[in-house]
Amino acid sequence: MLSTATESVGRSSRNEHRAIRATLETLARRLAEGGLDAEKCGGIREGFERLARDLADHFAREEKPQGIFAMALAEAPRLERRVLAVQRQHGPLGEELQGIITDARRAGVAPEAWRGVAERFRAFAGSLRHHEHAEDRILSDAYLNDFGCGD
Image (cartoon, rainbow, N blue to C red; front, side, top):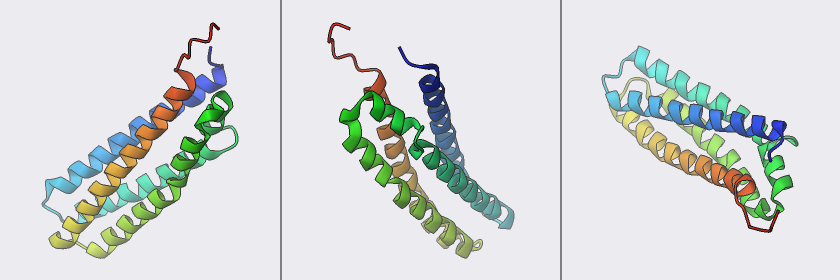
């Protein structure tokens, strides 16, 4: 039986993951639409910047002493290596997104530059989706696996 606090943190994490996926899809769609003008490019840059803020906050909540990783490790210490591996990805993911933001700022409205931004973002989005999936698997393994120990 999960505690109320654990259920609340888990629900919050799942909701954040859903919101992150929705933002990735929205940005990918806007990049694929073409027809770039100053307004559209500015909106995409703002979307990247909002995603960077949201991810930084999300990662900080996961890593705090009462965050989802600490709760998962309290429940399943055997997952420590996986948790640490996922946590080590937070910095590089944030740095990659900052690089994309820098490229987007420099791109102006040049279609060729935006193609490069779009390619870099697609690779980043794939890495982030893989990362979030790994986090979801950790939580599932911590709370949903039944080892049949007669409890």
